[in-house]
Length: 314
Image 1: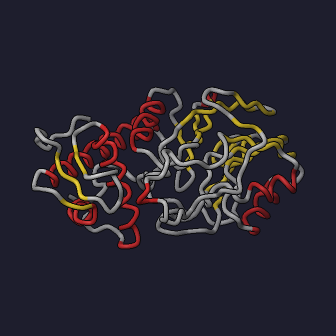
Image 2: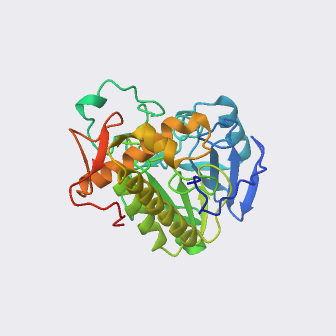
């Protein structure tokens, strides 16, 4: 099965690093120069409003990007800094922007995992996480953050990380969705940092909302956001079905499943694909569909639970 052949991805994103792009009235975006297989062309930071503005996701620890953001708001006042989640490509530059502007930082909270680590995971290094970040104001689902000429509502979207938030602008039918939904690729859900159960529930929460235009942490904007989310849901259901199909042939491990399911994947993403499969398996074990000896971990072996026939129940 070819990976992601069921999602209408858009990888056309010609924005250059450091360039200010007013993509909608009172919405500007600036690309950080941190391209990778995980970040696409780089992290996108957003400036909301004019005169007195908010910056969403200041990006990684990058002086040049901080300078570009500050130059973009020269003559304006940054009153708010909003952070969708605490991965190192999104939150570390917050300290620079706050030091330069005195703006108040809003986020769900410091980084935390979606569940405690199992014993077999305790010695695994945790990469990509910003443990230095702590907001001035901790925001919960549904809270409204108001500025000069704009009103954003926090939408809890755990899954990619436990503390992930989207920031919706209901009056404009716009949603700044961070890394929970991306137009160029699927999001990584890697336990224990992420949770497939939470991720799927959060997709449902977004799809039920009225915002139609999504601005993501990487790549181009996503028109028809709820419709696109439904593509993502079907893709994850198909991924689960592929896992169960492979397990119907007998007990196996995650690397074997990745090779069978992710045909033609960039070799640099093989490890991430393994954790995505683990996220599905963790969910399936929790639902009693798949069995493993001990905790569901990356190095485990998996089999269909007694009486299962390999069909997805999602």
